[in-house]
Image (cartoon, rainbow, N blue to C red; front, top):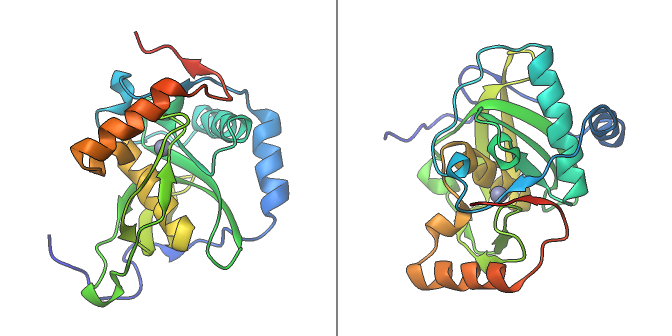
Length: 209
Ligand SMILES: [Zn+2]
């Protein structure tokens, strides 16, 4: 795939996701219902989700449930298939490396290819609510732009640095059927799965079998 050399994403303005974070996040989760989290092995996590085509009340209710579930599980990002829903939507409540909080939702996300000069890898630890109690070091670009739509279907773009850039990439991966452990070496993947088997999640999960 060709790399895009422009700074501005095509087809969407950078969304402002740093204002009124506390109020917006609370309003969503107070309307929503906490749902159990799907874990590795559940088929809904391992295939591409369907595109969102209806930007209606049902979608709004799903987003509320996702914020409620994300908070209950103490996550910084959550994809719809992590509560068992086969739709391309993720929510986030995540700090960037400047300590700025970002709260938002993206439907039908597509990660932009970065110009070569912006590909600086950062190899921080990564974890996932769907691989409870495990974590591993994973190198990812420290800058990301995701294009998609908001809850009303309006085109948007979200820009992230540092840990928030990692979150945007991780959540987009989920909606295409990939977990972060799929990006690890076989040995590191086995290590992460072992950590999961040995640990006990602090939130409700969906039994996989
Ligand atoms: Zn995850």
